[in-house]
Length: 279
Image (tube, rainbow, N blue to C red; front, top):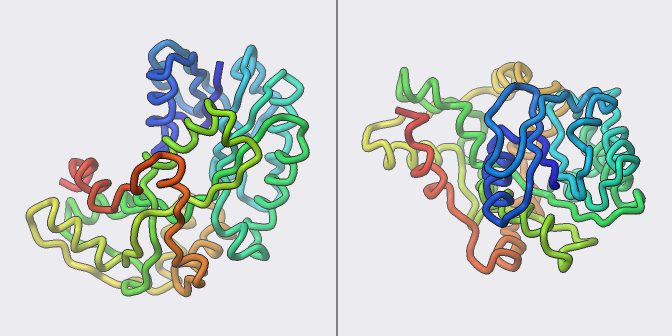
């Protein structure tokens, strides 16, 4: 049994599907009721309450750990989840971390994630760590405004990073959960090219076949919107990267190609698969 947290999200859904297709039994964990994956089960649990994970972890051999937004807040202690998993008998943990742990190690949320990485490394079980950059699926923040007003509103319109398709993260996570060759590895995951928010709006216009206007937000406006769904500290750390990416944050990593044997998917690929969200 493999436990997947965040199982109803942009990474968790394709990951549970990939594991099921590989013949694995999967326990999909989320805060809300959802359909069970093929050949597996769904468990409603809150990662902020590790004591309540007993049912989800029972009989599990491996865990994919994706933190919910509140576990990035100051005072959260996600290390308790790792301790609970190890005590339950889990023998492999694949952690979804962040590229910022390496590129911005002193950001508030990055310090906490580095601590969690160290907890996983020192847990005594097999492990792999994934450090993705920005997600292509963050464009879903614009879905309502594109549908209603044909507008993408974002800060730093002409500053880009090589955003990664969550489906690629899911495929890499599946490889790490199933293949011993990836044990003890830290992988940086990016898309194939640097792309700006303004260019993303142009891609959305192309796949929709209709105009999409770009509106540039101030940092304060962007933070206010982001803080509705994530801790303010995480919003600040994210905006620091989006405003002034370092050379390391602009680098296109070879790791997706190396693990999956193909180039990472582009933002255009992601947009074409998800165009219905913007119509």
